Length: 137
Length: 137
Length: 137
Length: 137
Image (tube, rainbow over all chains, first blue to last red; front, side):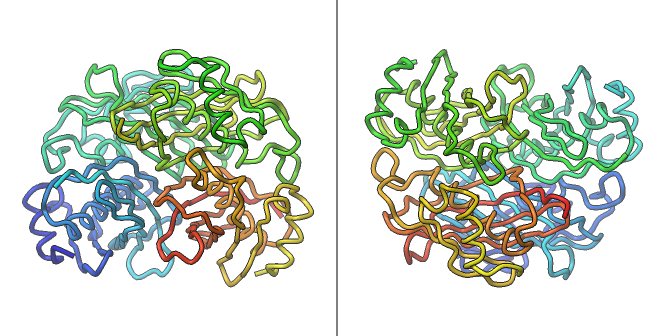
């Protein structure tokens, strides 16, 4: 991996204002895998008072982007082509933790799998896959 | 359809704070179809300065939810089960307009197709499908 | 479009044995859209006696491939990267007709939408989107 | 789990003629996970001579169905609602092995993840997720 958790955070903080505002934080980077935490916020609630689908979709996309940065370095902008998300369980109102890992990392494209957990609950609340176009170096 | 564009707006405004803040607006409701506008905002930009994927995902989910409300009335909370989105073209920095229509509306579930356009550009910038569980009346 | 319905049929017949065996037939090609028919066959039934999901998935993929051929000519092999399908209604036991159209046709990739109908029933039985990598000319 | 690998095979063999013909074989059933093998066959080739996308989609759907049977027993017919598949690498011409596991198993619906490998290659050739409606007991 070409960037540490701290370096990925700093890079995204400096390029996407909403990232810092929302409190996203890359916690760990290991070979082919990253973990990103979104602190609980009442702003993320949908009608009915549970964490909204878009909050989880945005976290999934953010974790995928962070994984590509950590692997390739800040060399350009990967572009999301497709994202598919399954909502599995109503999350309790807690921090969300996304774990993203490569299903494929090629020269021109990547496919990434993400599981999202709420707090330390063992069962995932959402699962997503995404495909990314990687710009030429 | 059981609710007008104005009624759907008022209902979501009163139940989801972020909806009003972001400026979403249901523009038209016809049989089986709804159109929702998201005004352009610099807050929606990703690294590189174009409108972010999560902004389009959130708009797609919002339009699907608004379509279900317009069709069924404010009788309960539909729950997103799956959302698949294809990003087709880099949107120019303009209002986004989502057009959602039912592929299926059953008693317990709905499947909805959404096309998103940027301003009055003829080619869509994103296409999404979503499946929703409909709560018992 | 660079190939007629007859030319697309002949090309696929000569390159994929299962295509001819299954009876697929391109019926019409117009700008950016193709229609492919799969004759009803008892071989396509799932447990319970209705047409199987894989039969519809295969038809969707076949229609997408035929659309790319009709548009680009027999210049190389497009590769499916992602396919998402929603099963909407139990199809009655009749011919299936797939209508595929481009959501995007770029130089290196295409995104295609497909609707599948059973016989002349007005409501679709399945909807799919697929992304394809287009080989360099 | 309510059925063994042998029992799931026998049940599907007796209800879906194409299953037996194609040579599918459930190899192992453990808690929440199943492994299904599809022997290599020249019938599964696409234009260009590699194993076709529909062959992998059908295997993914078959493995999901087998997992539901193994978990719930032969009590009724689960119905596929959505299937999303990412094709990761061109598979070499070998047996395909699908490993399916539950992301969620509820009373009325299930979400299942599938990885497909070609022979004993360590990198997966495809990944799929599917949602299923479970009939009332």
